Length: 119
Image 1 (cartoon, rainbow, N blue to C red):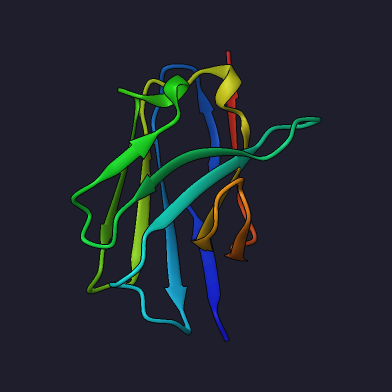
Image 2 (image 1 turned 60 degrees about the horizontal axis):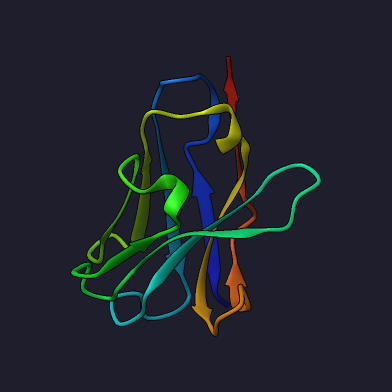
């Protein structure tokens, strides 16, 4: 059974930082890209970042480039998302996902972790 468990969310002031983690179990982790998405209240879920199996290639949505960093530790079966210079518009539930096929369609999702940015 594949499980993804996110942690690290919380309440932070604008300009602050958080580090999200996603621990994966039940499948081989080191040979697959990993992804982060987010969903704000009343909004559709949107792609945030992806990282290749080796960690050598990353890609971000434009609004988070230069502020967020995705990374992974294959020995720990964990992917991270470092959130810096947070803005109110970053407030959302953040999800990690694996086995994605484009268009936000992924086979496995975590339960999500809430990030709330206050002004």
